[in-house]
Amino acid sequence: MRRPEAESIRVLLQEWGVPDRAIVSESTSRNTHENAVATKSVLEQRGLARVLLVTSALHMPRALATFRSAGIDALPAPTDFTVTERLRRTLIDYLPDARALSRTTDAVKSG
Image (tube, rainbow, N blue to C red):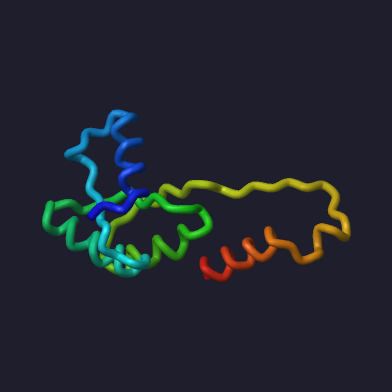
């Protein structure tokens, strides 16, 4: 069973010219560790040695370490960088809000 997000990525890759036979989806995992283990199995079955690991820049250090600890030669390809540049902060920047909670959640998950 393919996950909807995996199907969207497959369609996008095909639009970019990647042949369908070159796209391999793993849809059984529930977390990064399970994905790394399942990916290792797929690589061994296909005689492949290296992957391009695409994930959020925030999660890349953890994901890369997980894939490498599973014995996968993974090249990092981080996405969705969050870049902010504020020259001057105000008191409002330090008050709790939904965005701050989201950033805290992201930071905790990436650790």
